[in-house]
Length: 324
Ligand code: ADP
Ligand code: F6P
Image (cartoon, rainbow, N blue to C red; front, side, top):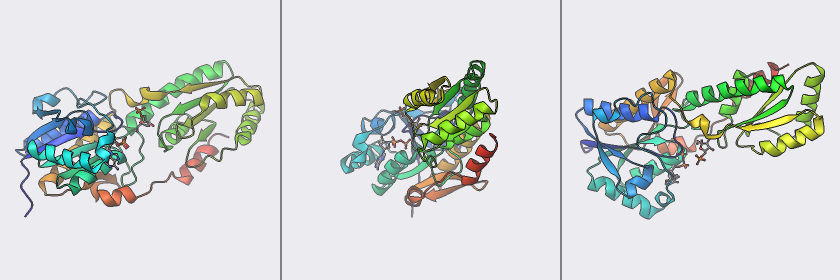
């Protein structure tokens, strides 16, 4: 029979994402509601190895649902990629009486949770990343806030690009994935969207498009460039030289990761955090909480990490059609 869960741990790992605090709050309060104790592990797997562990009460998470970042801090930890690191992590959990651990983060953090599960610690992953690049789930905590932040910033760049009749290349985050770029491209009515999953690196096509749009009377030309393609500054220089159209590059950077989470992020994070606790109390381990086809559900981490996610060809085609 599965050991009864009495104390659970929670940590955030990898890049922070708006809504992580709402997820932590939900884990803490759902656990307390169910009569469990909760320990917060600071600075991701680093804090686990260094035993930076604090007791969490319902009051610790008061006034946090609207705050960006993560109150538990986050980090990347190369030591945790080694077997010794993972064994030590499991040992620390046992020493502190942590029977189950909720890991809020991205794919990398789930790989860490998978390794801890193999060391006998019940683990549940909650998808927290602005990149939306986790294949098993249609939603990741932080994406909605990040795209809205980027969209508002791009609107502002567009105002000045129009006034000066310029071309503007705006680089958005997403690591190797183009979801933020695609959504902003559609939401901001960009003339071109460069996605790592689709871009053919044919810069001449881009140049021809800028010249053709200029002839059609368009006052600005907005190019949303995904971080996975990058090199926006040098691209701007080449485009200006080839088209004669003044071109500027703006890299939005980490401002996309901050700020108060949107309603959508707060709600998804709250349900997913509570769901993670429910999985642990049902004796489950090595699972990831997901939102798939309109339902909250969960997947085995091994399966989840093997899944591949692709950008919708149809959405990309629509984005192009709408810029004629
Ligand atoms: P994300 O969770 O956002 O994808 P990272 O890929 O940086 O972010 O991973 C966060 C942390 O998860 C890493 O710093 C490391 O501690 C842990 N991690 C990543 N991959 C593995 C792995 N294969 N095995 C064990 N731990 C891992
Ligand atoms: O995964 C979230 C993310 O913001 C990516 O979009 C980006 O590539 C990366 O993290 C940046 O990481 P760092 O904060 O270490 O610069």
